[in-house]
Length: 137
Image (cartoon, rainbow, N blue to C red; front, side, top):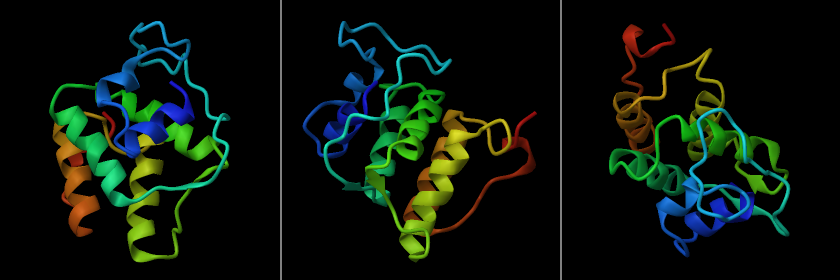
């Protein structure tokens, strides 16, 4: 997956199913081990908002992308110097919290359909509803 593919999804120019394609565009599904991820191809800055991350949650809940792909997507968002959000702003803080939780599920919460529902709620309301069972086992 490329950063410009992610940006195109956020801009609603491509469907969520395109996020599962390999970086070479041959339509091969990206495995959940981080291969095929490119973060350095945006030409200009792009501000990530809660709605963008909610659309990713919705894609997981619809079964279009796998929960584990959120880790790869978060890595692109963090590694790219072009995806921006302001963690000092209350809404930007939610964006930051979710992206960094997705990027490191081994020290945060498991990436499952159940936790994606809770991440979606966090993005919408700011309410944290995670329980011990959601944490890495």
